Length: 149
Image (cartoon, rainbow, N blue to C red):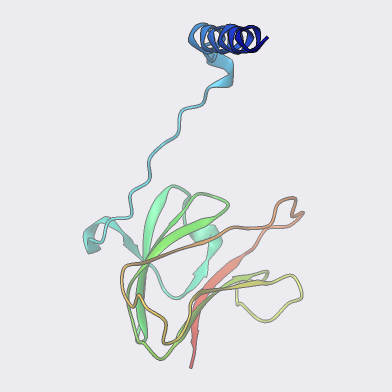
């Protein structure tokens, strides 16, 4: 009885391996993923003011924001932001503010994320991302990074 059970297990195991070996994803279901590199070189990122007009930046490029309290670089893919904080003061928290209006005046449609917490390491080379919620039926016109002590 025990040999029948182990024999059935080995048949199933061999069948499973055969299926995995023969199965290959077809072209329509596979996707190519483009690698993104956030380089810490000034000449590779475009300097922008801290209050960013979203209509003036292009997706697929790297940008740098220099503030008295921090320096950060980010990549905008047309929807989300991926970035690295190069330097920052230890005593400040850094936030990202997606603004409904270009002037970044407060609106109920705005979204804010904390990307770095005060007095919490690491203090440089900190990676962050800000993903927009899915199914938004509006676009943001402004973007701002700010600090709170």
